[in-house]
Amino acid sequence: MANAKEKQLEEKNQNILFGLIRENPLNNSCFECGQKGPNTVCIDFATFICTICAGVHREFSHRTKGISMSRFTNEEIVKMQQGGNEVAARKWLAKWNPRDYLRPEPGDTARIREYLRMKYVNRVWFDDSAEQRARAAAQPQAAAPIPLQVPAHAPQSASHGSHSFGGARGHEAFSAQHQAPRQPDPPASNSFFDQPSTSFFDQPAAVSSPAPKNPTPQLQPASPTKPAANQDLLSIFDSECLSSFSIIIFIFFFFC
Image 1 (tube, rainbow, N blue to C red):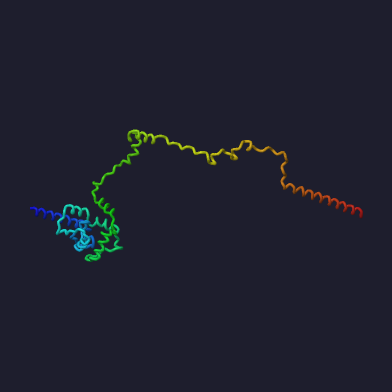
Image 2: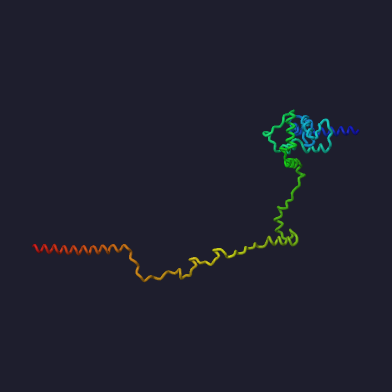
């Protein structure tokens, strides 16, 4: 009777694992070499792998089990359901670039061994934060905690007085919010603009009053002096002409 129950449990676990392979295309190929139709799982990394890669994993003391020829505990089944090749790739191949290092071909044991050493021992492409994000995304949305929106109502509650805060601290917060803003103290008079005004526009009115009239005559412009010089020249010319004219008349009467 016990053997029948154990057999039913084994068949149930096998159906669960094969169902994970059918549901996710990434689980339908070996996580290490890409061989189609994996029939083994690596319990340590919750990945689906082929038989050849499983042998190389055992060289590194990694636990592997054949799906059809092994017994699985409930913890191992739950780990495989939470894991898989897609989740493992986000963790162990987060920084992997196929142009930098190609994945080994199926059956190439030497390349597979070097590939597993770089991936799991040296952790060349490892990123633990990627696994946490992948598991957080895989969790149901209902399980995520709903954050309290206290900050959105905090400004409104502050305007209702001391009862929103409680006690003397609430009263102080309310008073500090509603009192008039304190005017800054005037700075010390040490700048140039704070000194008494001594500019030209601040002098007494007597300075700005018009100056008394000057009794001295105003200077004549330079242009009127020119006619005076011309008049002197004309007067000299007229005198010379009269003298010459008088001489001519005298000579005319003398000869006549």
